Image (tube, rainbow, N blue to C red; front, top):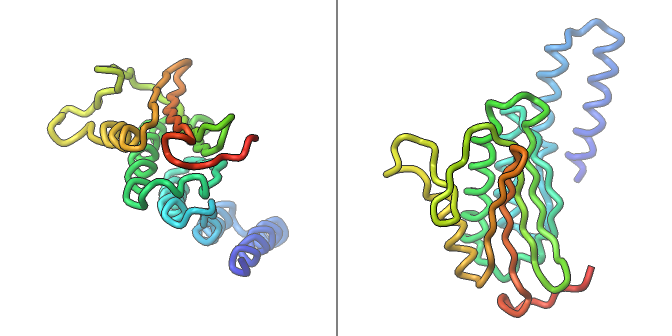
Length: 194
């Protein structure tokens, strides 16, 4: 926390120095990017999720992608660490690939984990441009070598099924929405009503 506070203070100090001493905008941006590495730590209440989100946050920062998270990580305690890594890693990697070549204002990925009326809802959404083709309710890979690609979404579906959840994918207005819904009864959890 001390490092995060110092990084926060440093950002303001660098900006002030740049305005008063004639340091180039490129130099200021470079210094801010270096400091951002320490500012990317994510704390959700779930250690496995914190690791994967911090890693993906750093990757997004390098690619100019805005990764936003509203997550109650405690609610994922029913899931194994390996499944958390795989589920969120695959979903975010797919989203990064989808937004990497888009214009700056569309380089946004949102991740939400929350409870709603006795259900745990996981949502990941991002913009996309390429046409998405579905087969058996799942998008198929756009890459030419289908033998080595397209397994991420199948892995997500498998994890969802393992815990008795429902997976749905909606693509509207060039926004991709991946939704997973788990009942408290299915996963043996007791969610407070929100």
